Image 1 (cartoon, rainbow, N blue to C red):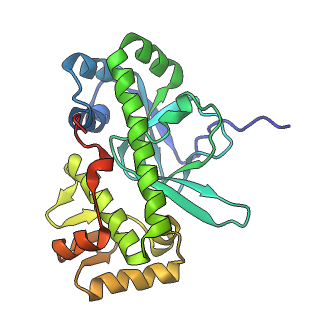
Image 2 (cartoon, rainbow, N blue to C red):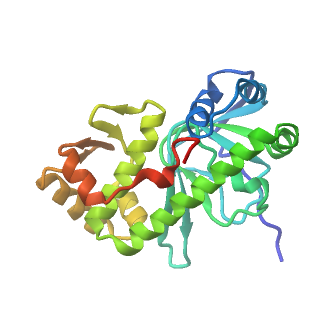
Length: 260
């Protein structure tokens, strides 16, 4: 049996070591809201050695079957987790935004069971596993915050399963859009009724479990009904009431407060 592959950095990727700087700002900002991070814990995060790498769009960060040696913090851009079956069909499992660590599970699950890919050009901060383990032992409060992060991920997975399995396609798309908007709002990436959703129709289909042709029809339907407009990777909400009603959205599962 061959050994699982290790993380490989594409040739187009640039990497370098940076001191405490804005690379950590998105993570700290999100932890302030979701977990109530203390000033002492902020200083610990600011002191972490992070290797910054720039990845082009639609490139692998870590593949199914690889052994990762670090976790990646998204500093800028969007990533997706996905699974590709033998036929070549792909299911997008989740979307990830700045401030998130989408492969935190690799700290304890040593071989990846899915792909982590960039959706757009991304700036990622790689934190060595051994560094994170030492941080967990040294700062129990931070270990609890990262554990809470994985539990929130699990809550989001549950909601995505319900979304794909039980809601009709227009409601599925509306739900994914609202979830993304609420997460982007935490990091000040929503501009009034407008926010970024940098996905092609094919990628939307892969996230919703439908074909690209069906995704195209659903996008047109939402526009014709005056609910949302989706154009060039941006969503503009036309009718907030209809949007919320269609999605049947209850944001408790995002746990965007330490009390939730």
